Image 1 (spheres, rainbow, N blue to C red):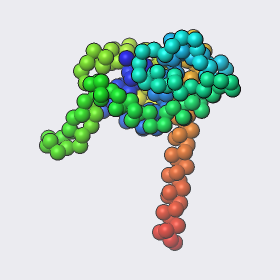
Image 2 (cartoon, one colour):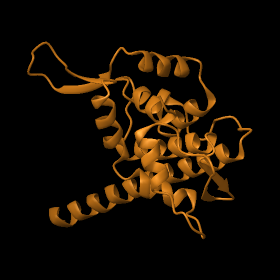
Image 3 (tube, rainbow, N blue to C red):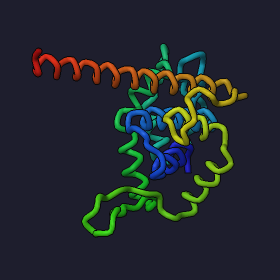
Length: 199
């Protein structure tokens, strides 16, 4: 399992309420962190430079690595998060369901209740839960960025790896920017509704 897949499984916990946009940005950040750890990319300043090692043997990580800008000037981390993160949560959900890591279950007493997705009891799912229980720093910081566990964003400890620090900062900035867009839309919609309502 990858950090992104572990993050998705943790975010599926019914006790957590995670926005799909926030989660997609964090998943893209998790991919970068795994690619950097494997040597498939190098974070140079705030830009992503393809590394010398191949991407890990994971379909979604290979897909992410294949989408990197190969020539200079290389893409900034935050730009890549927005581009790669578009609908990425849905992509991960489909991949994990296909791999049997997620199952669909109806809620409520009747079989007609709402259907929701939940982690399956698999070795990979148990490893993700163990990593979460141990508060593995990267996973905990990514989860914090999207509001899992009620931890306020930005409280993660410093990381020894500069690439991880750069990616994590970009994830936080992107999530805050997305929240600002949501708030602006809410205000605009409320103002529009008031115009229609009239004095």
